[in-house]
Length: 361
Image (cartoon, rainbow, N blue to C red; front, top):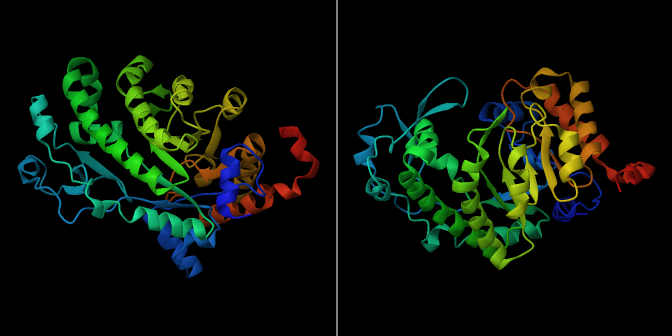
């Protein structure tokens, strides 16, 4: 079975030959991988099943000097398309955001901020060929439509965005609407080009629940996410739709299913009851993630990691893609990374399960 066939079956909650797997590394961990293995291709080395395509930048970016003058001298452009800026902060690969629209006074100020022109063919005309090539190599191909809430607050400020839902709704909605138009276009082109999965998402939750009241999410963010999904579904009604949010999003999972989400990521075990999620939604969703990057990966033993992998596969199979719940951070021991993939081989081969399969049907 190819990787593509394997993931298609898992997303449909049908039995593949083995549990698909995915993982991504922070720069430090990637360098450790290179040092330990002498290789520079962790996806191939660890037999990961998913590959990704994305838009390219246009030949020229908009002039943002007018807004940059209000930012700290050490600020750097982090998202060239939308013009978000960061400054050095904390440690490792972490950055602090600064907000070019933090002093905006009107809807006109929001409208005047320049986004890059990704509608021109040079940004997306390569997609069909890239997707075809990867699928012919046997890979499952996904593409990300972009953030809406996260990019908005990275431009406007997190506190101001959250307060703005109530105090400045016309300004927040103007920014969200501009970002939604971009996400819809990206979703349309990715779907036209043939991706197997459309990925979407916004971190809208803390570990105790949503950052905002659920009715606020339903008013400002749900309809816009629904438009992005509907854009893809208008072209291909059966396309898999993946949604990511860290934290505890239990209060909106039914809403996500309602608007067309079919794969939920990352189901953090530190703040989500995985068995409850499986029992309540396992007949309507596939799941992707499940291995805690705040708990067992950095702080467990290799045996703990293997047990966690075994337990989560047996909980969610067959509708499951095994993955850490976020990028693997530098505090994860190398032996635990190896244990994760060894356990994926040992416990993820469904052909070896025999009669155990009957427990999940």
